[in-house]
Image (cartoon, rainbow, N blue to C red; front, side):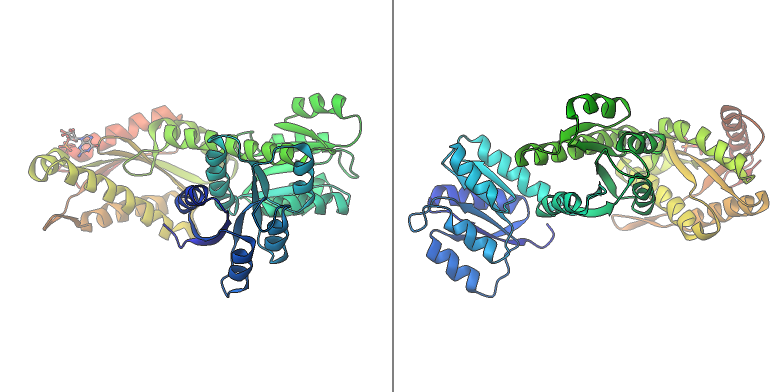
Length: 420
Ligand SMILES: Nc1nc2c(ncn2[C@@H]2O[C@H](COP(=O)(O)OP(=O)(O)OP(=O)(O)O)[C@@H](O)[C@H]2O)c(=O)[nH]1
């Protein structure tokens, strides 16, 4: 685990304090427990800088949320846990700038707390773009988001928002107003959707005026969700977190479907999704390109001689060698597609200014792989690859067939070769 984050738990019940400590440790926090207001005061006066606190609203020596005011006065972001579920207490807690308040009702409370603590950690990597022409409305939303540790970018209108999206590729959510100069919120949302799919970027629309009619128009134009500007805090945080989580789940499913588990390269299915779009772009840019099929020589012998685990290591080493090789020459070439098609077979799609350079690179790659030594137990395994290449002649599937034929030729003529 990365270094633990200091957290203060203020809780007079020993069993509850130890449950919170356990949950917090699992989420990456190092916990100090204070069982009273007085103990919390002493700990906060010490030199330790707490980055988070969970605070019991009702303590024997502070029965009306004074401990919450104490942690907030030390600028420690705070989550309030309370046994009181009445609306008056809720109002009193939400008036303070707390991260969240959690009624101690059922075991779900602690599951929710665990999720919230992990979320606060992962939120540090998530950027949210807030678009509103009113600086006070913008800064209110930003303040709420900062409480949950999100990274923030701001824009005054849709046109500025589109520029920010280009600048910051880590933006995962846009929160936008509707009535703005230069570009309305609905137009902004539809412009975003021309450039970014829903699984790349979520959008929550906000508006004060005529909210019910606007919500469906926003959704029709590509927003994921809608909130009236008079939202309640819990609703705001639930929608923000839910939209980010949904995008993350979809991305995780896409990763599982597209990435080869052993090598981390894209798989055959993903290659066939990406390659046609790439060919289109390359042709527009009038660049040269080629496809190479690459197969490890006598791979069965590696498995037979050293075992399947050694074979896996050789496959992984080949993938790493290809990735490193093209990463090192990236400054002269755009990112290539490197896929594991199955077993010990790979497919490369490379492109650049001229064919001669690409041909040279493939020959260099073959030589580089022949020098790789894979350490397995007390042995070093060396091996070679055969490569078949097809150049920018026609359709993708025709090129793959041609590259396959050329690969067969390389194998037939002695292996450790590149054929065209
Ligand atoms: N370790 C390991 N072996 C695999 C994997 N996928 C396929 N294989 C093995 O790879 C071997 C491929 O052998 P062959 O197709 O006969 O080819 P080869 O021995 O590489 O011979 P040539 O291609 O003719 O040079 C088979 O023994 C498969 O069981 C894998 O993911 N891991």
